[in-house]
Amino acid sequence: MNSRKLQGYAFLIIPLVLLAACARIGAGTGEPVPTAASPSPDPCGAIGTVQAAFDLPHGMDFWDVFPNAGLAPELGGQSGLHLIVYQGPVELTNVSGIPDVARETTVNDAVCVVMPNGDANLYYDIPRAGMKLPDLPSLSP
Amino acid sequence: MKAMLKQLFSLSLASGMAFASVVATAIAPQAALATHRAACGAQTQYGFASHGRASSQGKRIDGIRARFEPLSIELCTGSTSAARSSWMWVAIEGACGTSGNCIVQLGMGRTQPEQAMGWWWAWGRSPLAPGCEAYTAVSPVPQRIGDWNGREVRYEINRVLSSTISLWAFIIDGVHMKDVSEQQICWANTFADWFGESHNRGSAIGGWDAGHTPNHLDAVANRYRVRGDATWYGPGWTAGARCRIESPKPPYNCKQKATDQLEYWTNH
Image (tube, rainbow over all chains, first blue to last red; front, side, top):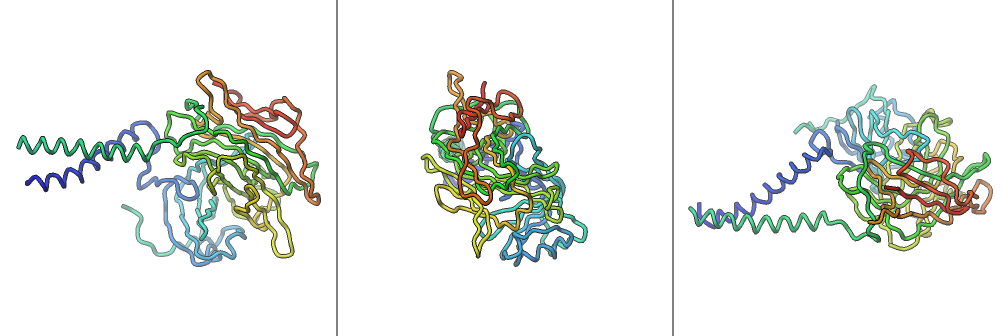
C-alpha cells in the first residue's frame, strides 16, 4: 500500500470509526437510539415502526386506504399528501396539555399525514379493517 | 512500515480533530439569554404542566392571547432524551370525554434537538368528545412554526369569521402564521387556558441559577374573548395565589402574579 492510498483511506475511515464510537457512547446512556425498526421522530413527532410510507394525490384518497376511518374535513381539499403508516404502538414526543387531563403519549393504529405546506397531523385509532396499502417496495433493510 | 504507521497516526489525529471540531460545532448549544439550567430529574414520561384558566360562564371562547416577556426557556441538562422540552402556551380547550386532546394551542418552547427557542402550535380532537363521535382522533403534537425574535411578543389564537372564511387563526405579533378550519374542530370551545409545562426529565421550565434562585417565566397581559363580544377580558385571577392546578407537586410551581399574569418556575 503506498502512502497516498493510505492517506486517502485514513481520511475516509477514521471519521467513520469515530462516528461509530459516538453512536456507541450514545447507546450506552440508556437513551433511545433510532434504528431501522425505530426511526427518528417524524414530522408528527412520532417514534414507532413504520409499516408503509407513500404519497397520496388527493386528500379524499385517504378513505380509499382506510375505508373505515372517521371524518377528517381538513383532508378534503388537500392534494399532494404524504402518509406514514405505523404498525404497533407509537410514542408521541412533546404531546402537550394541562395536567388535569391525561394526554395519550402512546397511541395505536397511527397515521401521520404530511400536508404540502409541511404541516403534519397525527391520526390514531384509525381502523385497519379493509386497509389497502399501495404496492410498495419492502421497508425491511 | 514504521514510518507508514506513524503517518497513519498523524493522519488519524488530524482527521479526528477535524471531525471532532465539526461535531462540536454541530452540537454546541446556542447562547441562552440567561445562564439558568436545571439538572434533569427522575421524570421519565409526561412531565409537568401548570396553568391558569378563565371562566367563560358557559359561553364559547373565541379568542385567547398573552404577551411573552423576553426570558429564557430552559431544558434540563444531563439527558439527550428526544422528548425533553419546556413550553409556555395559550390554549382553547373543550370537554373531551376521558381524552385531553380537544385543544388548539400556540406558544413558545424549546425542545430537543432544536435548541433555539421558537414558536410552536398544535391542534387536536377526539371522538370521545361530544359532537366528535364520527371524527378521526388527532393528537395535538406541537410543530415548530418560527424562531423567536428575542423581543417581547404577543401571541394569540382568534376565531375569524366572514362571509368567505371560518377558521381559527394562530397569530404572532399580528402575523397570521397558521390556521385550522372551523370544520375540523368538532368539540365545544369552552375553556381558555394559559399554561407552562416541561416534559420527560424536563424539570427545567425557566431553569435556576447557581444560587438556586428559580428563573420565573411570565406570561403577561393574558386575555380572552367570548363569542359575540369583541372585548378582550382579563381572567381576573387572585393576585398572589397559586395556580388552580399543579401536577405533579413540587418541584414545579405556578403562581398568579397578578389578575392577568402567570409565572412558572421549578424549585431545586
